[in-house]
Length: 102
Picture 1 (tube, helix red, strand yellow):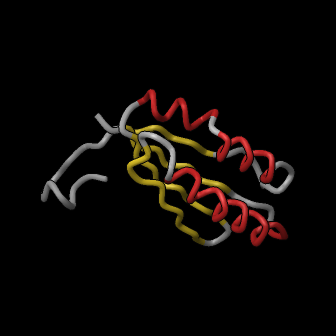
Picture 2: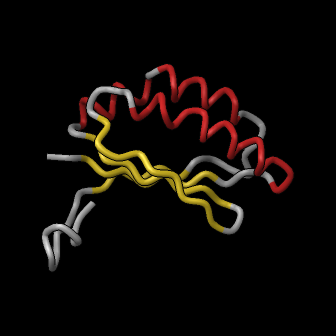
Picture 3: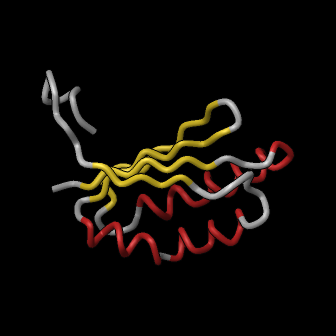
């Protein structure tokens, strides 16, 4: 069963561009990781939200120590306005099976 992760990254106001660039550079590397089914970046008012889907908890664990994420963590050091908000979730399908779950 797939594992869904929603991670919110809040940069310091003067670091938004640097954080955006670091995230965008990491995305292709994450997409190439085994078990990555979805890794999508969304930008809102002063925040970036990552919506992720991994084929298994094991794939997510590997992602947590993979080069793309460790490099990104180093690039984000001192640029964030607080800790990352990372939430692991399970799909609760509803309605149309295609539209009702990530």
